[in-house]
Image (cartoon, rainbow, N blue to C red):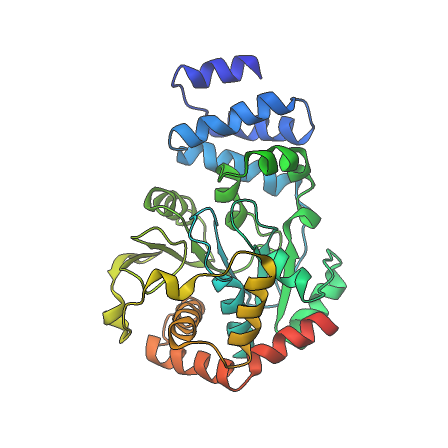
Length: 330
């Protein structure tokens, strides 16, 4: 690792193959915590390259425990995290609203590292038991329209960096990797990023892949989802757009309107309130807008307005709530 670190300290970049090998060596626990922390810090001090990110992704995908859900036209709805905004769990709520419309969702997620509550924290608080059993996951998809892929169950390589990431408590390049390494390889992706540079990296990597649909979102005020607090960039295989809330018939909202509280318990209370149809207008419009975009990613011919109405029916018809109840109780 000393040679690698010296190379990086000299402002050199890693090739895709070098990045792949290094991450495999990290997974094999060949390096100590000090070296790992130093290695991660390099990519907090300067932008990661597309080759480096692709190499790290290749390693995690090769080492992952895979599940075959290809019989279902699934979508993953996930953000990088690390935006420092402490919102309620927008992408997780969005996933249940989308599932409530009948669309199959294979949600990939993890415990929070740099915010109050990650998707795994939220589901665990509702009593969900994580699994990597393909038969169980298929049952969840068939009966609840959603399954949850808790990253540590599928990416044993991540255990090697878990304690270092927790000690750093900062966003690292592993935040960037999470949305790119869903072990079920879904056909559709809605990905949120904490900065524009990462959005462009994702776009560069994903546009090389055939047979997938994707939408990448970055709100210009720093959110890794559609926040309705500002304009947002939206990347697909068809190009790049700058979209304002007003373009969608939505009002801009204050950042405080989507705050998620100071604990998992706070976030869970907000989550439950929204799913029960008791969210504020701001909370509801944010999750409905995200859900509508997810539905248009799966079906390019579907208009935003049509998708928004479907999402609305899911939320206020309590279909999203039923999806959560089924998932937890199956």
